[in-house]
Amino acid sequence: MFQVENVRRTYMKKCTRCQKEASFYKGETRCKDCVNELRREKYKADPSKYIARVAKFRNDNPEKIRDTKLKQAYGVGTEYYESKLKEQGGVCAGCKRVFKIKWRGKETEMPLDHNHKTLAPRGVLCIKCNRAYGLLEENTQTMLNLIEYTNKYKKLG
Image (tube, rainbow, N blue to C red; front, side, top):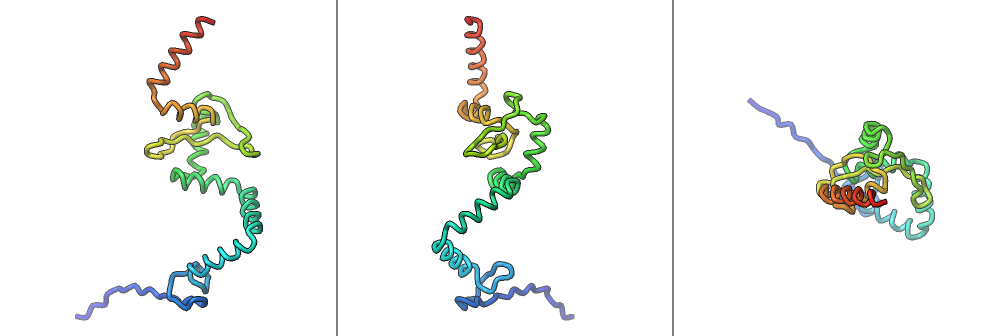
């Protein structure tokens, strides 16, 4: 009995610019290397045009930028951030205050805290609490010592 194997064929396209068989971006007639080279040349010719376009996109799409950054850094998106913030009642997990600060001329939201060894996301802390937590190297004994120290000197007035 004759049995036909299910063979998947891949077809390589020939680039219209360099004439090499290579991989392509969707809908392109030039290979990825040629497209990237042409983009670099256009950027070198007039970088201000591209910088302005990127700046406009960032200003018009802050939620997309935030989502992308969260996914790149921690593997979670805006949904995770929003769920953690809701779980915390919309406030910092440390000081229990709502913080929106000006950073580089823009109002920013509270950062997503993460484990520095595993990069696993945790909760949402304001910038002050996030920095303090990091500067204390997440050492709970140091935090307890500081609480004891604070209480000792509170009594003295």
